[in-house]
Amino acid sequence: MKPNQLPVVALTLGDPAGIGPELIARLLGQTDAAQHANLVLVGDPWLWADGQAVAGVHVTTTPVHSFAEVRGRAAVQTPAWLPMDTVDAAQVQRGLAQAPGGASVLRVLDACMDAAKRGEVDAICFAPLNKFAMKQGGLKHEDELHHFAEHLGVTGYFCEFNTLGDLWTSRVSSHIPLKDAASHLSQDRIKDATRLIYRSLQAAGVAQPKVAVAAFNPHGGDGGTCGREEVEIIAPACEALRAEGVPVGGPFPADTIFLKARDGEYQAIVTMYHDQGQIAIKLMGFSKGVTVQGGLPVPITTPAHGTAYDIAGQGRADVNATYNALRIAARMGAARLA
Image (cartoon, rainbow, N blue to C red; front, side, top):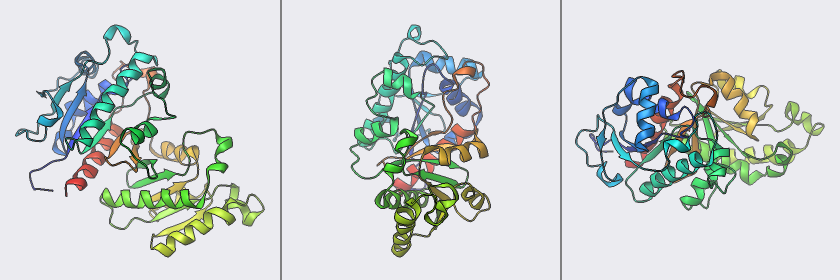
């Protein structure tokens, strides 16, 4: 990366009915966010005005007419502002998941991804969205990650990472019924998830990350007496990864693996299903965690918490996770420019 060249990071306001607009206003109005990236804020003018009013801040921005104008700006200390008209204020009821809000989120995110495909955006950081609202508004996939992957033409392995400070987690299966989790386990998926989080941590600035792999069954299967997945699938995958030179430990019982990471033994944990990692990460730092969409050609991040409909509009939303999401997007975006 050239000395004075910051990565272009697109910021979105998230679900219009949730806490996203006020979070982005607080992020840009009360932090050093603009020091880390050449920011372009994308969204509806009325919604941005509402977010600033709820947060009690006024953010100075530089209007642009297209993503193409952003990279060449001289004064990147002031965020660029690219307005889009995607939803009317009358269509949004704060605190409710509704189709117009979900459709708005999809339009804005698609515009940001299209800009990334054209090379005009280096990373995307989006404020919280709601999957139910998005499905009402036209989302055809189980979650936003699968939508991103299709839109960006991804054919390889991809998965969500959840991060908390120096600890990152990936998972072999994600937004599926728990009864189906065992059927999604395979040596290839475990190896893909591990390689991906290892490479992504390196892209985020960790030179030699150590990765721990979780078991699937209670007590790590107790030698096969409490399930065979560890013996037949997970342990062989770990052995194959070590043979490749990936520094992997495990499989470790899921009820103790996070203690090892907490104590600094590992920087990443590969979990076998959604709640195996999410419960621990959110308990350890709900207001600070970040979700990274792993395996995509452009870094995409978001705070790990949701839209918090119950407190939307009250000015109580904690900005820490959003700030952390932006910092990771900026670091990964910068790595693409290096």
